[in-house]
Image (tube, rainbow, N blue to C red; front, side, top):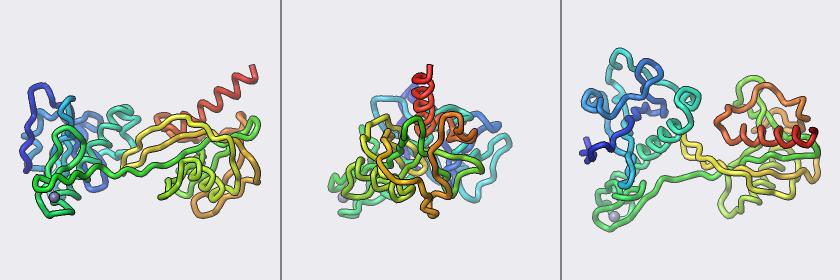
Length: 269
Ligand SMILES: [Zn+2]
């Protein structure tokens, strides 16, 4: 077990994960307090802190596979956390999960083989022998509201829950600007060409490690046609045709859709 040098008043929550990233809560809805750490210790494979010296931090911990779950505690899906405990809690759980993975994959330095430890100020690991630093890997992805007149392009992903549609998204590839990713992804998934790309906002999306970068764009050419691999359906929707099943309110995809709807409705008044 690593020694965790907490200072007074620094503790916030303890995020105990299974290997899938689901989190232990008390009575189905209450995060365990770090004051309970001693109680938890026999149940944990390993634990550490979400380092950053200037602010209070949380603990991350990995549950022992063979440990018995005490009464009142249970794993809750990480996907349920935003609705259950709010986006801030979900985001902190994501930081804890990413720090847990960073630690697990960087016990020893890939350059010199020396032992690595948490960096004092950054969310990073540092080698005690050669100073090599390793940060959490992040995968940038674009998400785009493509507009055509008073219509919005949305598609059905192959893994979506029944009835759900959303705006289109895709991961950035090496060598691409964000604008190039947008043009490529929208065309690959829907056969639609876009122009006049403008920035909307961003949102970290942990589990595992995405950074969502949201944009608006305008239709330039092409009839929406699903690629069949990532999308099973894709089309332009008028405001009164928007399907009832949309991404959860906490997501930036939903904010893009809601913002478009508000803009169209305002134009109609
Ligand atoms: Zn090293």
